[in-house]
Image (tube, rainbow, N blue to C red; front, side):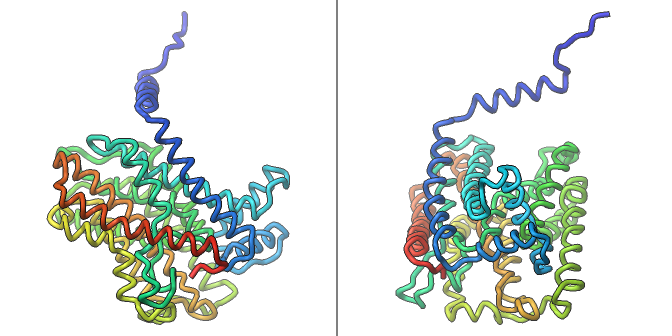
Length: 416
């Protein structure tokens, strides 16, 4: 009996879907995003890695060298060693041809490219499919933006006291960005609205597995956004339970909750219970760490969130009905609260490690705010001129701040 080699009913729609997706892309816009992001990041990352500057890169690289040689490294680094493992992996794959400094620089550039492409394609999934070049503009500028910087009027600091966006001194928080974007997208699917009340939210096992892998890798890279996302998602789930709205429990439990809690529990034990600083821990000390960075915290906070704050105020009635933007604001608020209210005990008290969750949460907030604006353009066909003026005029100071901070870090050895 002859056997048919025709594609199955399951695989054929998938192949057709992939082909239609590829055919619909504007590859010139995609190429422009990649080339512009590389052109922005490569010079600054080369300077920060390959010349003598004030940064955390060297410390993390020396930890990788110690790990490779079998020497002990601090427990707080061993608790999230993915960046060091990636460096060692590149060294092994290239048989020593690409060293730690070079691969670290490459990771910075590639993570920016990955984050920009995720933003570009995520915006493309909106109803009405915003134009490729508009999506490219937002995706590229998100790589560069910084808080609205006013050093002549304040204390001369370009970084300290703000909740930063662009980061040119810490490797793991920057590489975390594409992972954080995917984590937010997966978490947003848990609480996604359904068109029919009888329609149960159900995602494939492969998507649940992908979500679990992403959150494990992200937490092993840097746990800060995980400890921001989980409580924000918990509050969103609680709200939907009260409102009797649908929740994808399989994705929530097996794609996000259990993997994150498992990794975070091990990290907490390793860092604070059985590590090399057993007296360490987490303290409630409002503004103890943040106040050492600057004396202008309220103003610098407002300058950090200027764009999403203006957009939220201008479109408030629509924002309160936009689930992703509410979710992003909630995550950022939790990250900011952790930064301003908590500190670590013992020797790392003033390292400001809770700032990383606030920074990543702010980046996600910017991404989702722009997505909200693109959605308004479709829902209301065209925004009023006043509304268009508001969104671009509020975003421009962040671009100018990003250019100023970029030049500062390119031309000086400092980052603050």
